[in-house]
Image (cartoon, rainbow, N blue to C red; front, side, top):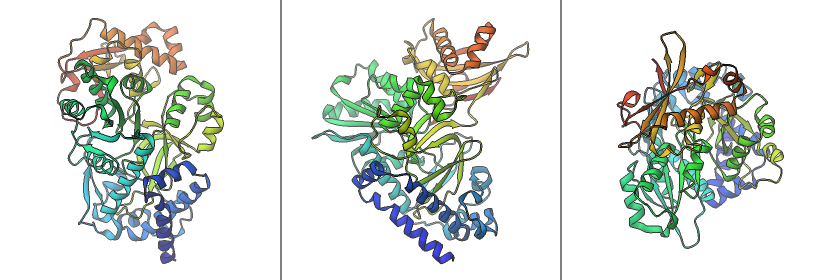
Length: 493
């Protein structure tokens, strides 16, 4: 029986990997995807778990001796970082209990959760990731005729997964310069090679804002260039996208995690159109997300043949990577993100013919990490709510480097949220900066939360949202200059 399961799993892996032969084949699969393939993908995910329960020592111990009786994917318990990764050493989480040494690469997560982790990628796994990322890029950022594609990779280099993997993947379809997050090098590169290329800058979203502000301050001739942005690592609001696309031709985001892979899902023109409709269409939001949901999620499309996604009863995303190229399988892995999964035909039916779609893959509506909020007046205050308020129509947005949230207990024992703003290096705050930012945040909160809007009407003190402005590297931002990701919670004071 086990031999049959292994053979079937290998056959499904080989079948589902045919589309990776060439980016054009990947694009054809994405454009012609049908819901029936999702059922095949679920079977493949079950087979992956079933075989891993015999071939992966850690997983065999984790699921117990009754693995052969688990007849449905949901019968296998979810894994996560604390309950699985921390519990078992690296080699026991690999197939056969051994690490493929030659050709493997060790990535390190950023440590944004408090502790960096190491992740071993086999040579075959990396090739698979590179092909998928390259194919997605050619679809989302098509190069113009007689124009070369030039990727400036501004992710941090070194052991971190995103930077090195992105650079290697992009070299399949573009000329690449791995500058890292160095504003001066990027500006010099753009000027040296001139406007004759279709540029794509890959970076974390906040860095892309810093790049726009720095180039503006330097008088960069944007009009003569075609520069797009491909971002990842954290969420991005439509307010920030609008701000960036005043200069960039297009900005699209990818979704991934060091625990899993950098290419779980990606934004498309269709998914961005859906998100923008959700922002202004309460009926569509109620139909897709529920009448009581007022948050605006990121919207991605994903390939279930590669990364099969599910949701728990609490709407947390579970991911199973089905490729046999993965030596260290991630099986129903919970990275701690909240979301909804909706098939493409369902979303398309609600939009009618209003939006064209470049691919028919299912959609992931992602709300972000479940532990990255603070409570305010009985509601959750999310970093993306603050970002909307900071960047929507704010004439001082170019002065801001980053922000974070904390709770401040006052002398009367009342707790109020504080938004800490870090100025760009050398920037001088205007007298109205804090007031403008506070008004923008409150305005956005009132527009997305009926309860908060009612609180403002009934109790003027509800608007007592504190905004503190700090010089670069001061206050809660001290010692954060070397971090590759922003931390949005500063704790209770």
